[in-house]
Length: 115
Image (cartoon, rainbow, N blue to C red; front, top):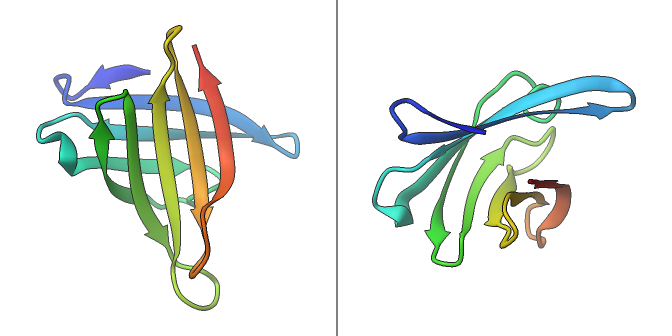
């Protein structure tokens, strides 16, 4: 995790594995004002399949930011994807990602805790 582009963005680079295969990704969070116009860009070797996903959301006073984007499904309407970053009082943060099927509630897809 590092500040980039003159401190205007937080970049979180990560790696993980799926069925023994290495994966990686980057999440960029725009830090510019106003905080109610939060923007993110996400790419991941497995989830986004070579594409960027863009998100809009907002920052909350309790150390949480939340943003929503969407992606095309194989069939039917687009699905949603929510990313939530939450500051942890002991230091670090939690990263949760939710898949949002059309007409349904959010389903936890990714949960990671960083210190």
